[in-house]
Length: 355
Image (cartoon, rainbow, N blue to C red; front, side, top):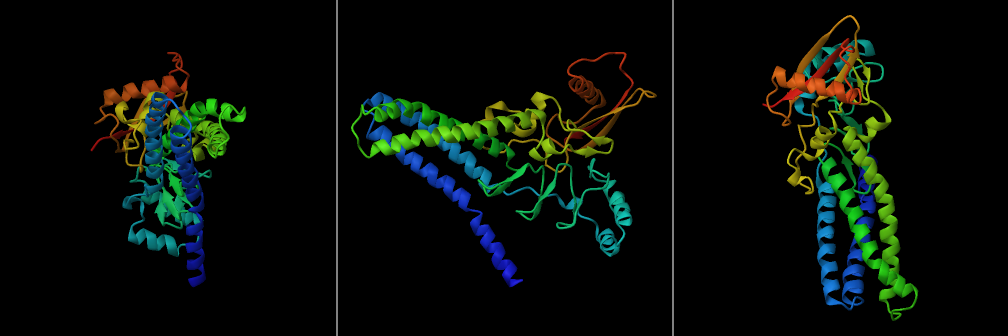
């Protein structure tokens, strides 16, 4: 146990190296831009002050969102997803997987769980000893189950999931803007130093290197930010983008998509005035989600409604309101077209109600 404990401590210490590297680069960029460029190189006071004001706005938002992503503890499944004591003992004593699944299926009946493994089995974590909620996955690096897990990011030394996904997207956005602003404002002085139009001082190295670093980071972050914006618009995680979630009726990559506007609100909240700030405004509790499940059934014309979990999206769900959402989901799923002749569909929509 002692060697394992020491190894674990070493791993945790080493995992902070990428974070330290990022902070060193950001610290140097702050010095190079504020001191070497603005204070020592730019002669015009109006230009200098305007650059410093905008730079510090981007810098503050970037640092704020970055450390919120780092410091937000990954959300874990609630206690209701733990097996009751009796079933837990039976599960641990049982050696046959089929019998273990029967135990899990009895417990999961009362839980808002609608996804399964690829083989149709109930998703259960043998490390954390919990039934996995929808979109929950076990992170081997953090050694815990993380709600709505997207991925483990070494640059923030944390799991990106339900508790900090908004912060992570804002971190990408503000880091991209930070780099773009630096590269755009440094460019003219980069050219002047490169063509020897300015005195050859120690500021030359900082300005030249600052432009290259800012441009390089901007290009790399732009692709990642664009990808995560696409994920937000589709209401998917990185894991779900590579492997479609499996519902009771089979895999469905759009199973959690509620339309672009509601997908955005799932991450950023309803009040747009808070979207740009790294404060928590996401919907729900991470243990249950609104789902859209579409089954073709030529023998039946019906709309099945199921009430599941809690959410702050629309308040108490009435049948009339849910039916309206259901029709919208059908239209979204069929690219906005709805043919009255194509009514031979059974649509099951899981709608969350507010407590």
